Length: 119
Image (cartoon, rainbow, N blue to C red; front, side, top):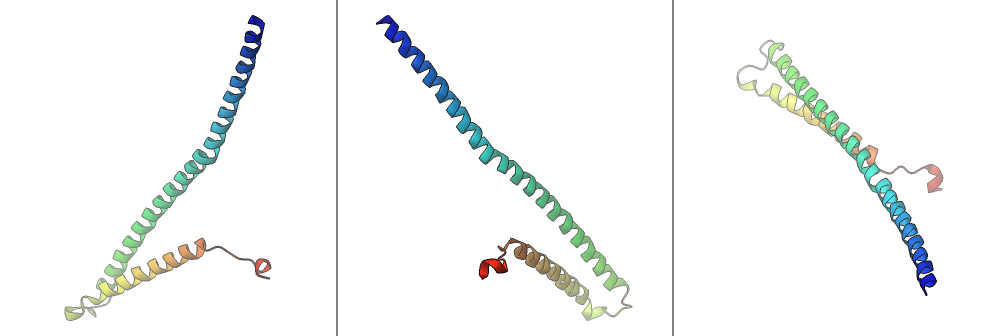
């Protein structure tokens, strides 16, 4: 009976070892399929936010420059009751640039279909 119990102990040890290997395999797979894409997504978001901030600041500086140009170089065309027109022009330009950016972003996210898939 002692021989039987020691034989079954080796069987359980082998099973335990294979179970541990299977657990490590599953754990490595989960890390590969979840953590690695999340790290890549984090970099994507970081660069996206940094680019958005840089473009927003650049657009604001250009809008102020356009406003100063309209106010200073129009030789008094926008004086008196017309002093609001340079602000309106700048607002329209900024909204137009934002609309172009949104259109470009949304166009890049739509799934593309090839002519071969439609035929």
